[in-house]
Image (cartoon, rainbow over all chains, first blue to last red):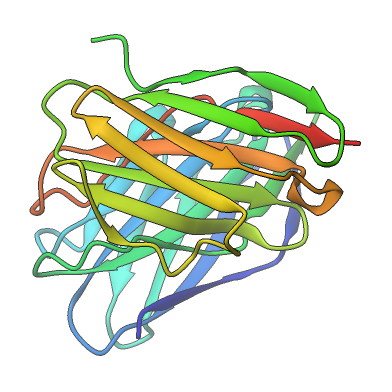
Length: 114
Length: 114
């Protein structure tokens, strides 16, 4: 069965600092991995996705994530945090090959301080 | 495209009342998902449809919950009778086809059962 674990339910950074949100996955077959962002009172929107092409994936708003099979990780990073990045971030996994259940992690709430 | 449209955005009702949440998917998307989000349990998949047919309802909490998709442009999630523990944000999400992992979310319906 597929699952994702997000380490840290809350992360706080200063504006301009590096953002690192951690995600580890468990999958018996090559997975597709996603990061979604949820701003207050809104639905989730896709930040980026890994679908077995390049291991370093670039997304919107300056975010990127690297798929590391040896570490079963898919951590999300951004070199310099902006106040507008404050939101909740969800890692998600789906098994490649058409299995339809997208499994979400518990989420990490990112706070950005001036 | 207008995206996934959900209504109502907010619903406050009393215990025992019937609640109906509505979703208009993105045109041409073959898959429709209903998720529930709470602080305690995070994002839970309740049910999903493929070409209007319910495929997996194993996440539906109990018989008080039912979902329908009478046509490709409309789905409902009904709770009857509602209970305070049903208070949550309910999201509808759609997906173009089996080969696309990405989900497109609506803005959610926030339900409060008093």
